[in-house]
Image (cartoon, rainbow, N blue to C red; front, side):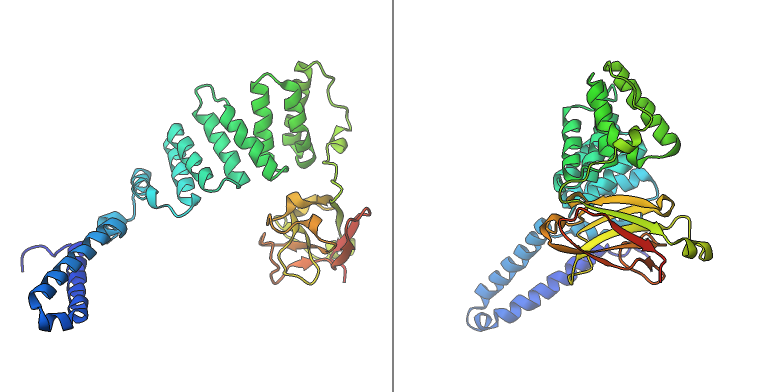
Length: 345
């Protein structure tokens, strides 16, 4: 048999039309007996109206196989995303499009896509930092403009410990000819960096201080750069039991979570920090900035349960095989550090 098959869209339209006719004919059966001409006109009008409504609020393009065909190139993927951008349900679609533009080398379109993403999720610190970076990449002189700096300051307001936002803010202040402020912005990063990265950061801070007419950092500056705990902070010291460490081989890429949660409440933390296993022993300051949910704050509780957990998968929720310290109840505010030992019986 020759000839081509009808398109899926046409087949679907015919099925819908037949079903619509059947429904309206059933509903208007009493009118059909008494006034058949009027009923026929109403059925035709309602059927056409349904079709027109679907064209307006439906997704007829989804019936086209070409429209949902898996893209073979990044250009085809971008074209599909662009066609559907007005129907993105959340910021993730714009993030995908922004990353695709970056891979294609179109910094301007990437910047605009990041702005669309952050407009849909304005309280996401990661999005704010990424948008600021995209604006700098799109700038002719690779500079952080006023809008980018606004994004960075907003990110640090949401999360004062956001490393990328703090790093970029220091760069932007250097670009503005404010070396002393740049050095001050970078200082808290020293406490969370190690090795070559820390040495490079320290050199940049010293260079900025020199440009500002200030002396270089003293040798013990790293200790003084730890964020001073707020009055509501909970100081937690975590260590690994030596005997346990000697007889158990732990994965080098394992993660340590330090968690505070409501006593007798849900397992969701009110404050949590994540560190590599290699950082043990460590001291952390848990406060409201470490809260995963803005509606549940550590400072609002009178008592918390504090634990430390080693996770091989990096999942903050407990899983089989995780190693957890004995929980400790702590009354807030607490001035004494909480000591947790992993691997004790």
